[in-house]
Length: 245
Length: 287
Image (cartoon, rainbow over all chains, first blue to last red; front, side, top):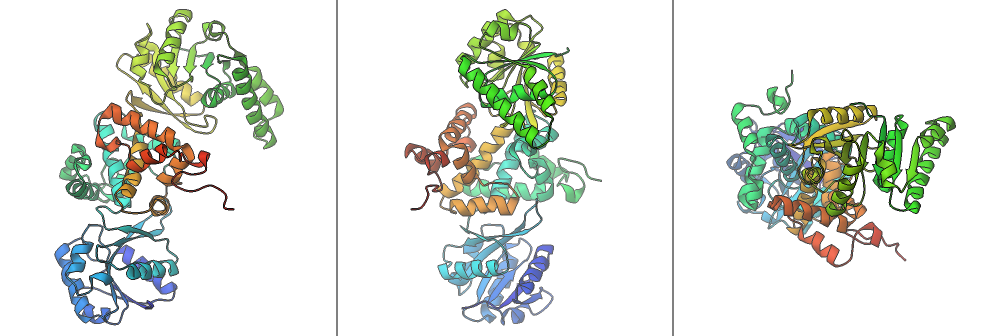
């Protein structure tokens, strides 16, 4: 089956950018949201992506609605960063044609990047069809199994957690830790700069999921929890590890 | 305190580069190693680097000659350290040998001489306590190659004087480097965080989540790192990498630093990375 028509449900900066990239690459793209009859717009597509808030019930409802109206061969995609793929898939009639594609922005170059996450029941053909479409759109997708935090959020959360522990145990200052990682390890950003961009709340939420599913080593550093309690969530609130004006 | 003359112990990969940086900043340098051949090899490397700089018109021949003239090679520990204001140790990573050398020069050097160790793995506090001048014993962790890498981890501990910290951070600036202050602990800042960075990637492979090339691509394309954890492990050498991970695991006794299974098994199989033609990737030329 070839993918030509793609429907994107839900609006965000990432979804808008993706829609633009896909259109430029020759795909027919429809965008819609919950204020419209989204399942009607989904019914014409071979690939349907939801870009909804991280709410399991909401995503479940919308994807089941699409499942009911879509063609048999249509692939349903959740863009969730949470390990919900297999669970969402099993509520549809097409768990083999259900997959996760998580989009993130590369902080150093600003480019869009896709992690294609296979649920337990996702078929190899579904994975290949998605990878092929993303490549056609000029993206560099990677393939992985559904897992908490996927590759990027998991790595970033772990590094930030350790850096927060180093700072809170007075090993070094925030500035010196960031400076050394950039100068001595060639990192594009220091861990605290990264934390402030990603959002402390989002780092803690990833760590909590990792902690639940993979064990004690992912327990969030107390400092990160206190920062969430204080509303120091990073750039978006004007204060995180650094202060922004 | 004013530093005029610096002694660098060890003329290897780190030592010769450190000596060169100091000489380029105008300091008189004694470069000492245990054998004449090692001293000569270190100085030959400096010459090669400097002539490259002259070729690329980064410096004049006269400047290069002046830098070389400031570096005196020797195997005589007494002569090398006696008149130095600062001794930077960059010898083999063996705590007993390092302590032995520091005990020796503790007897030779005047009480005001500052001792610095370039160790990346040993305890600064432990070495400081082997001398009678812990307040003048500091960590100065350079990165490879010292001529090009800008950051230096300045490692401090409970017995160190503020004055020594001030002298060494000022020296870093005079050398054109950027100091980062870190309390003595295994891996300091950079190696400790790198262990987490490596381990997460390797653990994902162990858990069957993704293949090395996909994990490396995610680190590079998704986050902007220059290399992924598998490529970098292969480049540095898997045996070296495993040893560093083990040092962290033994010291911190936390699961975050536990050596990933795939790394242990590769080392056991003798596939140590690029240097053996095989590691996580295959580098052997296809026939």
